[in-house]
Image (cartoon, rainbow, N blue to C red; front, side, top):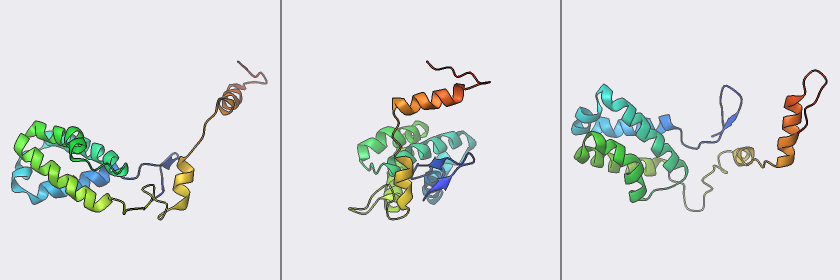
Length: 146
């Protein structure tokens, strides 16, 4: 579950937007009406944006129909209201089946990677900010302390 990006920073997002986009494309591919609406090039940015919105909702374990309708279905319905609503509902069901955490399971992946939660739970204080500022502003023997 723990992923490292090119800057060696730990990526704490549980469900990647591309994972959700793949599921959305599967839903679209299964419905001929959806393929005609969402198969073209003008729909690609909408599909990718809806996948990004869904990845956040999945990661936060937010499965309410109203919340999905407002944040995912609304964009799909902009292209075609009837088909977009049907695709959105099927997409929500598919995401829920794939990403919903079991009752009592830590949604932050404690079972998969015990270090992920700790790595993302960072406390920041003004004292550490000041130390960082002093360390960064130290140039040529002079420290600029504010």
